[in-house]
Length: 185
Image (cartoon, rainbow, N blue to C red; front, side):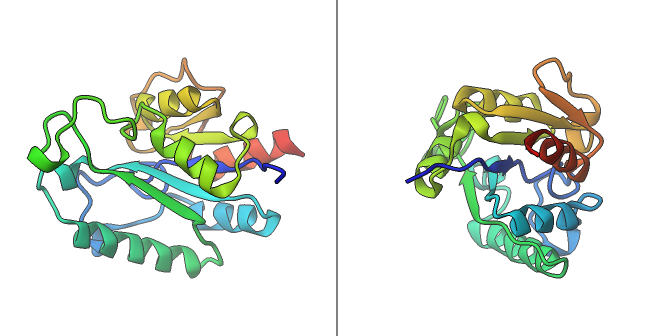
């Protein structure tokens, strides 16, 4: 099988506006032009995979059903713009989580690359040709640890995150995708 490049996207603060422990669909808002940019990737056949730490589940701030409700709403918002996500990978583990989800450094918890490695295996992704886009240093580190190029967006926590690790710094997700596609063309 020929492996293909993909775009890995952090969820909170990158795909959607940052909300501390987002757990209500009505609080979910896409970042500017995110749906349009993802629709463009879909049309090109480039896999779009969400990679998200969700410590709120592990810490008991909200439940899996709340997370699923937010994801269903995100899917609806994206579909309204002709866009879709090809896969979602989530990690509820955290060093200070409740007993079932407490782990000092779970392989899936960013900055560890576990979710990206699993996604690459399941979707036939060439990590060296792929990009991880996020608003935090841990997003960039996870991408680097998986062998991807990395882009920092200046939304969410990206307004205060040092871009030194980034191959590209962009105003938002749509800008990052547009610039990445320009490098691939």
